[in-house]
Length: 287
Length: 287
Image 1 (tube, one colour):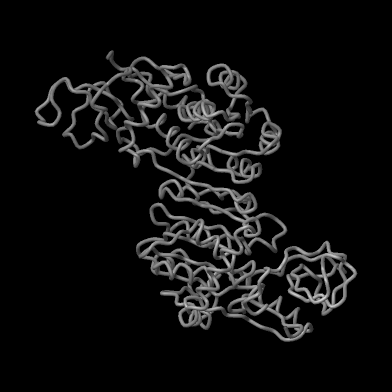
Image 2 (cartoon, chains in turn yellow, orange):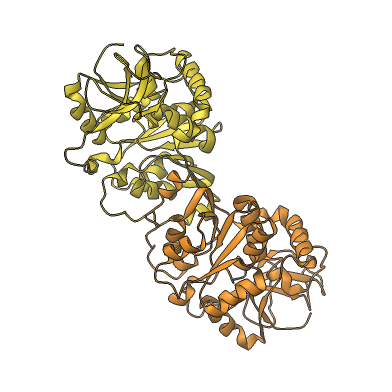
């Protein structure tokens, strides 16, 4: 979810308010009956090494059985990997030979979405923001073709060239002009997975939407949005499948890891500037 | 498909080219083996009482069994009624108690779409362009609530007032700002049926799309386009069902009938200005 971001400001933040991020941590001292010492928790905590909480900030429990490195539960087995899973499985539904176009293709969501589409026999085309990241799309995530959006004059034309049979599935985390360019290249009965719209997150005013929504009519296409956290009752199923794909080598999990709390602002800015490949993480303690 | 049209110019037309319209007619003389004298045909013919054709302009055969007045095959059992049927049945899928918002609600498509939704127990809210047409929406088509888009300052607010539980199905023939207003009022898991975009037909430049497509994400909503004529193998099924609903009084078929070829331009202009209720037709000969 980071591709259009080089052109954007960072999202607006309140002055003097703590900046929070999704965190996995261990309870080191507790007077709360529900959260005993030693337990692992996941929460949206401030950027700090130790957090005091009354228990209300816990956004979700960790799985009862921890079988993977903890970082996975923030990435490939967390919101980003699960978003890729539900978006691609429930809405995209890739079939052999179909063309799947992924925005923010090197990001934490896009890299997983593209690999899931490959597992189902689709041809994957990834849009990213540099030559280096294009190379990583192919080498790390098995994309069949790539588009460096900063190296093309006309994104719609670049998509047309990379997807000569049209786009059967467009996995969109960007919105804006990239969505418009993709809509202009849909195949008949295409599916557009709306996962986010990072291109609009920093804007004070709502940006105009794509002027070519009528493509959905002429292509009999479907556009559908979803929210990962509303599928919580299927997290176990999704995590089992994703873990199996990781274990069998069908999905490569790439993490963009920073060390130490002091590097959190840098990690955050690099992610919003689209400099990461895979999931951006900050390690503030050992497991 | 006529509601936003009062604000619009008529669609652009080539000078000196014949203007065509969908026509049902009878072969009165033939040297073509496939089209014997006396046969009924449907085609996109010029605005004239008698047409000479080499057979290539026939867009579709008439049903093998004609059981209704011929005018029905241009309206309620033709493109407009069938569009309402496929859009509402395949994409909208109304359920009891749901709120269904219909644009161009008094038009040939919208009037049927709203009535189908009623049959399935939904609450229907129609948007149209005058107080008189609002009255017809309730009296003729059974709408539960109406919005006169020319009498409200803020269409989004008017939709919010008329649909306090949100819009479960929005049947859109308009696009543009009306689509944006509807998207701002979607219920969770809403379906948006894209049937056309008459607000854009007369435009030389593509208009910006809705700025709030992100509503599809937060509401986990689906937007889907379709083309009626690609469902031709289901026309018999659809016509049988629509005819049964007409016969049982569940759907009222309203025709906006003009008499004589000389009134065709008037009929066309009134339709694009949204003055019609139901299907606009010109009778140029008796059955």
